[in-house]
Structure formats: structure tokens, C-alpha cells
Length: 355
Image 1 (tube, one colour):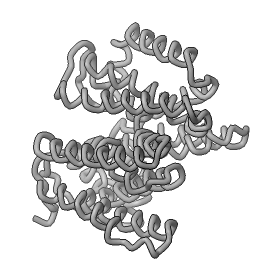
Image 2 (image 1 turned 30 degrees about the vertical axis):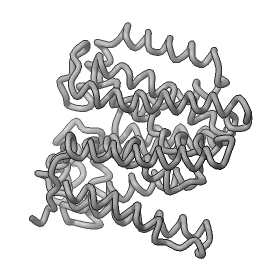
Image 3 (image 1 turned 180 degrees about the vertical axis):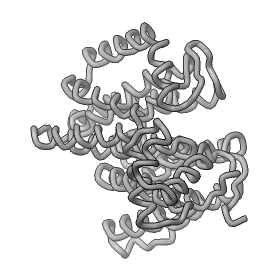
């Protein structure tokens, strides 16, 4: 537990230790570089026996197989997506050390997320705090291959924002690549439909209709999810902490309400962050279905991960400077409180693999 707290505490401390005299851009880059190093070290160094370690025991074993077996035999030994197995084969040839896959996954996922934040948020400190305390970071602790896929889809999102034929093709290729790591990434193709809507009633109707369609075919979706994830989820059978799921739902709703408040006096905000607003709304609808089955909750993270951009952005657009500072300070405090709650109730102990 102490390691989790030291991780967040050291990242927060770095921001305040770095002098403003460095300049805004340089301070951001140094902060992101140091935060990246800490996050990669903590995630990559955790023992298979640590709480919230997910299935990393299995993934370390698969990397050992990739070291020992030629690619054709590796592909024949499991029905897992071949893209992930090929990635293991390439990495095992470069670095034949079984723990390397954990460091590589941590570096890739955190690198993409921090790159995405840097491109889209002015208050990079708050964005990193939201990413760790509210955003997809917690999900990345247990979702190994899907973390790869989500981050590749974020790259696709940045391409699709360009709204040109060439970038659309590149974005589709990125989604297809993500699907070779985790088949559920194909759900991100819905972004091609989502971007056709303006933020308004039409889009909200689309979200509600999507929920109804999912509920109509929920048994087939759960069966598909179980095949892909190797789980035994059931429709209508909720697993997990009901209160823990309610917290993100309230945060997503509060963020969208703030977006509406800002829109009333700053129409440019909705235009600038229309993708993030629509993805968070769609992700919220999917996430709420977690009370029916965990499969849809896992899929929702392809869309709700944008909270790490949207919440800092909307607080940074509050009308008065005093409101921005107060709202951001309160939000940082609440994020830290949420992280501490999760550390004690969900993350559990942390052990280094060399122990």
C-alpha cells in the first residue's frame, strides 16, 4: 500500500518542486518525463503476487514461451489474438528477459496516455492526477492486453480528429492493429458514427438507442466477451463493488454538467472538445451497464478514458479565474481522497518482483 501512496505523492511533489522559471513548456515536459519514469517503474516492478496484479502471471509465462518457442509453435499453442503473440515474439527476440513485457506494457501505455494529455490539456498536472486517480490507470492494473488496445485507440482518436480521408484510413488501421491485441477494440469503430453527430439531442438519442440494442443482444455480447477475455461473466449477474462503480458515474455526470455550464458562455469549448464530450457520454452509458454485466464495463473504458482530458479542460474554462483555482484545488483534493480510498479498499498490498 505504501508504494502506491509514494508513487502518487512523489508525482505531485515533483510538480511543485519544479520552478516556474523553467518556462511553462519545459516544466510540463520535465514533469511528464519524471512522472512517466515513476509510473513505469512501479507498474513494471510489481510482483505477480501483488494485489491488483490481474493476469500478469499468465502474461509473464507467455513471454517465457515466446523466448523459448519459434513463432509458428507459439501461434499454435493458444487461441489468443495473434497480434499480441507476434508482439511477444518480436520483444522476446530483442530482450529475452521474462519481466521485460511488464516494463514494455507500462512504458507503452503510460507513454501514449501522457502524450495524449500533453496534446489536449493546458493544466497537465491536474490531467495526470485525474489519469491516475479517476481515469484508466486503475483499469490498466488488471487489464493487460486491453490496456494496449485502449492506448492504440487513443492514437486512432487523434487521427480521426483530423477528419480527412488519409487520416481516417490511418485511424482505421490503428483500430485494426489494436484488435489484433484485443478483439474488443473493434468497438471503437463506432467513433466513425459518433463524430457525425453534433453534441445535442440527436446524439443523446443515439446513446440511448445504443444502450437498448446492447440490452437486446446482451447474452450474445456476454458470450463474445467471455470468449475474448477468457472469463465466465453472465448477463444480469453483477460482480464488484456497487459503490465503487457509482463514484465514476457521478464524476462523469458532473463533468458533463460542467461542460453544459461552460457551453452557455463559451460555445468554442464544445467545438474544441466535441470528441471527448461525445466519447465520455457514450462511455458513461456503457459503464452504467456494469450493473448488468462486467463485460460492458470493460468495453466502456475505450471511451471513458477521455475523462483525463475533459475534466481538467472544463475546469480550466470556468468563467472566473478564482472559480478555476478553487474548483481545481477542490478537485485535486477529491481525486487524492479517492485514490487513498481505492488504495485501502481495492489495490491492496504492493510487492516488488525481486522480493
